[in-house]
Image (cartoon, rainbow, N blue to C red; front, side, top):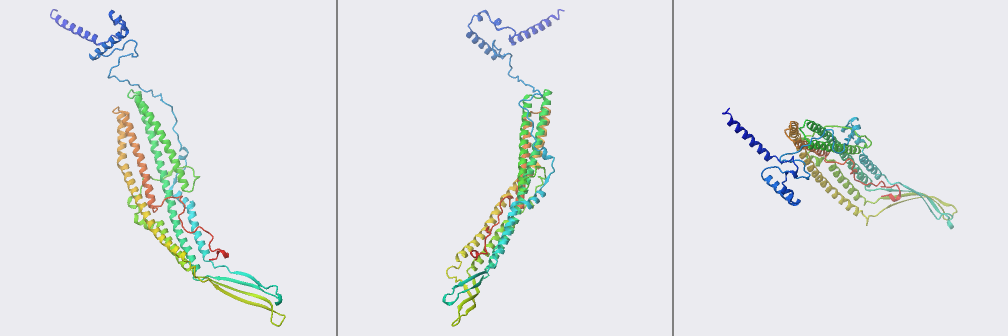
Length: 525
């Protein structure tokens, strides 16, 4: 027993030292402040007591001890610097109002899909601009027919000294007058309008290309809007799945309130974007039906492959488009019209011959008799002398029109080349971007999102990383759809000879007057 005493003494000393150390480090939170004050401290006035308490608190902080809240303060507990509070969010609780997600395309999905071929065929048969172009051809043909018609003859009555007087009677009778057009002017006038009809026929082909381009571009814009709806709805589904995961982790004590609130905000934003995408599709579909001349067509799904872009090698080149475009051909046809007008103007100086013939009855008595002279015939011919008016002003104007039309051909070719260059650059840029999105960036972003979602479910990363990868993925998808749309817009325009505008007015030239070579005297050439 004597051998154990030293060890007991040492063990007891150790316990006593530990107890004293704990007593020094533990603040007196159980006793009121008044019981901890000495009698001398109770006699000090309030400001001095506060100063003393503040001084002692500072000394304890410098010694590494926590500050004790004074009596009467708002603090109810001791706050350690390294302690953070986490409030788990109740999965059944929803901060803010809960609004339903709008579904504007519920009826659209139940309708049969529409194809580009059907819409384009209907537009070719019913587009009003094509009706205008065809009417311009018919007008020029009718003008050619009218311009070649021969002047009408005239018939008249003429009387002179009808009462007779001392001669016993006057002269009266009828006549026929005909203008003979010389110099082949009628044929040249007819040729002018025939050339205009040929130019307007090229204008019909030009307008058909514009209508096809307008329908196809509107179709692929609507198809891109339809793909955007699918992407937004996928984002909404992913956001709702992320919200479900966040609430499940909160139930397990592995997620806090900010994660759930962020997930809820993400769902609401996805619903807004989805509704905006649906409205954009409805607007694009209405634009398509108007260009296709079917404005009463109800919104329906579209059948097409947005990703099947034409290869760059199949896109026409600038030289082929500039020389073979209907727009360039129509400008060249207008040169032929101007030359025909110049030839006709030069022949207009040739005067016409006016012939008149008639039969009269004369009541004049013959010499020495009481008998009237009786029937008499007459004939006359007249022609204008081109002394001062040789149509020289119109000839000069027609010659100037030939030069203007020739310059218009050059201008049209240059304008077509400029548009083709811009369209080719737009197509090459959009095609390259779409390929990189499809083959590189989208697979990488998809994998990054999958890994971040997996790490979040395994508590390996925060929810902010999931949001960042999700936002990146769907921003790339939106950019991919837009690149596809831009590539299709440029490719369609190039395929249709750089012509667009399915509802633009017909570009046919020519006189819009329908009163030429009138059958009255005032309308005689």
